[in-house]
Amino acid sequence: MVQVVLFDVDGVLLSEKRCFDSTCLSVWELLYSEHGLGLSGGSFRPAPEEKEIEEVRQAVFDDERVLEWLKSIGVNSNWDMVALLFGFQLQQLLRELHSMNPDFVEEILARPISRLALQRIGEETRRVGLDFEPRFAEVRDTLDSGQTGDVDLPERLSQLVQEWSGRDSDAFVHGSSLWKLGRDVYQEWYLGHDWFEREEKKRSFYPEKTGFLQQEIPLAEPETIRGTLDALSKEGIQLGIGTGRPALETRVPLEALGLWDAFDPNRIVTASDVRQAEEIYPDQAPLGKPHPFTYVKAYYGREKPDAKSVGARLPLPDGEQILVVGDSVADLLAARKMGCQFAATLTGPTGERARGKFEELQADYILDDVTQLSGLLQEWIRRREEENEKDAIDPAQSGSGS
Image 1: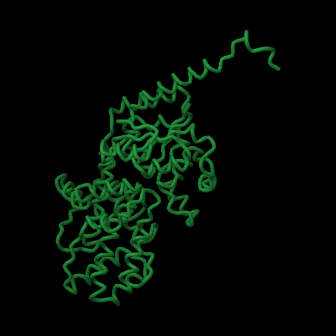
Image 2: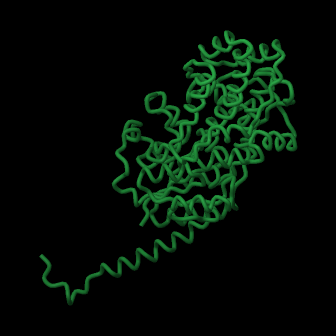
Image 3: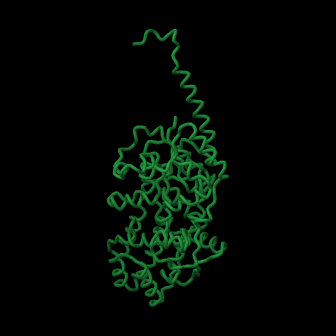
């Protein structure tokens, strides 16, 4: 019987809507705000109405087709999505600028790309009269290889730059200055001005941003989810979390919904833990999903040193006693590397349409939502009882034993 259940948060316990809204708004801001490229052709407001948010999301995700593609190939981190989606448009812009002013572009590529560098690129774009219009659908058409898992999209982005510039550049890789800038912009959108400055210890550029942290949406009635978690715990099953959210963004909404204390605090691993491990082991980065580090550390426990999880020999010898519950291909791939069972929830952004992909990848269980774990638990209990009955020895036939 399963002994440990490790949960993703987005798409399992909480809706991903606000996270993906923040992703699209971050890309939009970097393209059109005065603190980014400042391109013409798009309006930027730091306090958009809901209708504006939906219009931005429709454009950046190409009516959700880009998002579905990213999720289907295992891209799980919103920070990575911002870096990729904006980075693709930026290299397209730089390619067009290169044909007009190659010396300027090569100077840009020779250094880390900061916020100031983006403003310089925007100024040069206006100076030469380049009318650049982002082509959001092309990121999928250009970078899609049909593969699932271990897809190094930043490396492909770097290859594109090398092809048109003739230069090797690490400006677009994971952990670069550009990646960190995208992360900061995302955090400001999601956390809002006050929480951002308090948690990140950085200046917020837009006091108008109120953030989405207090606007999270549970994927079932919180009381029903809590009942499911408590039923698992009652049977001696340990509960943990492995999420791409930072610590604050995990704790605050789950506390508000009365779910936080259902989990073993030693088994709650977030993007904050991943960042810390990447700083210690930069040669192993990225350690976010689909890399199994998040779930491996949640299984071993946070008090264990990162080295144990980074260097874990996979698959885990007792992997069959672990169940990972997630909504994405990235979660499934991490579970497979660990040798764990995997339960897919159909409450992610693609909903029921994800069923075919999970069937193709042979998920152990496919659930309409996380509360269906209650039914799985009853099945596990029934099997355990049957096994116990089968293992019981009839004293009349057991002989003298030793």
